[in-house]
Length: 243
Image 1 (cartoon, rainbow, N blue to C red):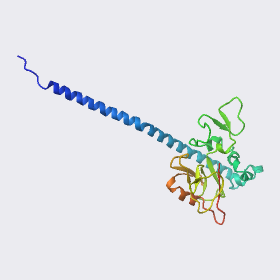
Image 2 (cartoon, rainbow, N blue to C red):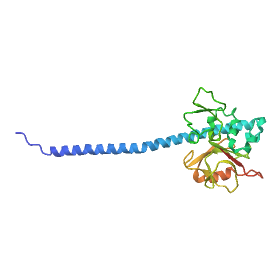
Image 3 (cartoon, rainbow, N blue to C red):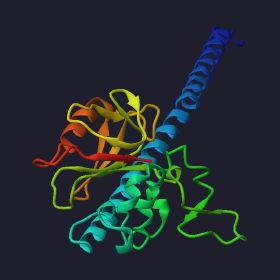
Image 4 (tube, rainbow, N blue to C red):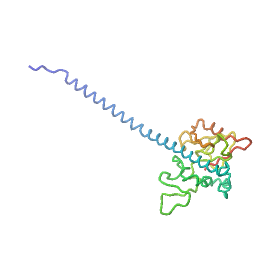
């Protein structure tokens, strides 16, 4: 005689409930992955662009120092045009790009002075840039010929030998909380920072006279600028060229 088996329905219910619980956990995990994956991807992209910007500024610093080595420690904006510099261009803030252009021998491509996070540069990812007029049969090439083709500001008033001074950096600057462009005469009580949104959220990159690059977060930007733009000796405060 076969004895009745008790509790089979209960065990089946428990098993089903367990699988439902596992399925719910899996669905929750998939939801969380979908929620945070785009954020992680965006952060990685921003970090990659910031690292690339640091390398480009270092290349710019190397080019400036090479130019200065060939010109008795003077940067392009202190050398007359007839001698290969850009001194006369200081009078026209619409031609700040020319201070970079005269270093075409030191800067192998104008793309070095273009940050990928700079939205003012048109179609930067798709296009390639060159110093002269591009051939008519290449629609991807563009001529470097405008302030909006440059992502970095320059600082005049310092020499290669001057230590711990800011030479260039991301152009999305504010002075006392207001965005600034053009030829800016600085003052010792100015408070400079970076716009937000800007090239790099929450901060920016600065190139110093020794060729080093510093990543600066917005909370301490004003302090770094104050020290890095302090005049040398009895010289007047430097001028910023912000394209």
